[in-house]
Image (cartoon, rainbow, N blue to C red; front, side, top):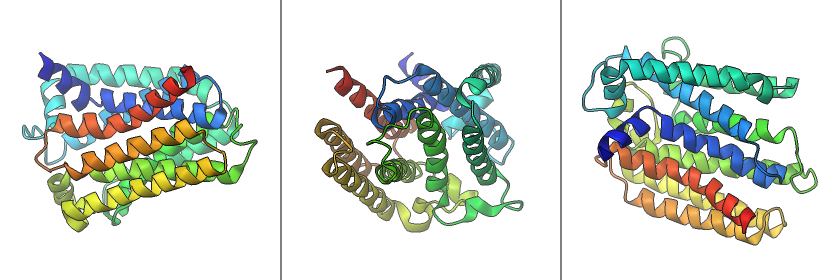
Length: 287
């Protein structure tokens, strides 16, 4: 029963979408300095959930159709009705919250940029070879998450250090590095798949060992920028300590990753670090 639940939560993209939705919670606490508004998190959850399941349909018709060795492709093969339900729910949720969250021209521009990056990345290689650019995958995914989960929610109430745009840019850059580092670590799981698809991720280019080093160095960079933000009083000490602890946990987890680790382990641990940021910041606000 436990394995079945984990199978549906991870392979369907539900857990990943939930973790990504927490990005807007962290943003509203740090940048907007207010109680997080649930509609932004819900919107990010639904569009992420929709993206992951549309992506499964696109690649389900690829050479991996019915591949029983890969859980994320086995799931749509074994649960077509559930896949359809997820698509309907995710699409309906996204549409219902679209006007509430994308309610200004700057937000429309931002969501258009995010959609364009996602579209270009997922286009076939013979049409737009963005995925063949070395190392672009992690940063393309991170950029889309930063736009939808951080920039758009902070447009309404930008109170970050009295509208200090330098601090704001540093925080956005640090979080982009953080998410990219986790994407690089997560790509270790997909190294064979990405190699077959000619997607030049860091693990494909440099191998597992150097990918772990690159991912860990990015986390160190993230901790360094957060230290600078604390020094200029853009972060509270307990907030900086939280980011530092999560970075250290991430480095320890990444050092132990292997391509043969279970799919559940990769998803729960790597994506869970994003969720841990939001949970920690919420607890700090409540204490």
